Image (cartoon, rainbow, N blue to C red; front, side, top):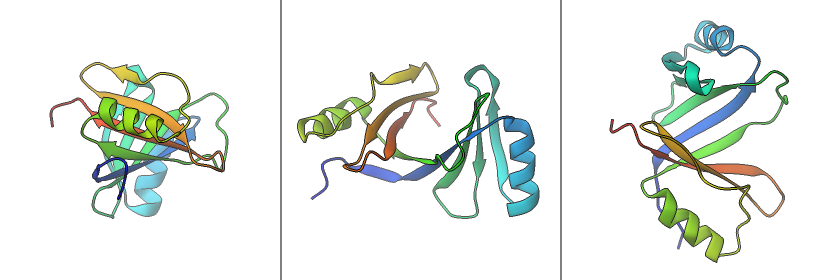
Length: 124
């Protein structure tokens, strides 16, 4: 039995230099649809053609190619993080919250691959 209860969403987060340009490229090349640009957070999201799967574009001056981070949606990030920590899962710092938007927490699998859990705070 799983330690946490994931919802039916996953976001694949990519580091990019220019979110707006990348969103245009993913739209033109793969047919993804822009959901929103959150300029204050340096973040954009696109709907892919797979139900429940979004592409997140995080803007960085020097992105690390090949560094895709799966972000699993949860309904209670505090409780789920506590369960993972109790099971010995290593986290990278504190849970980060952008009020009215999202709370995220980065953790690692046994091989050091970064993963995240996220709770949607937007009320949608």
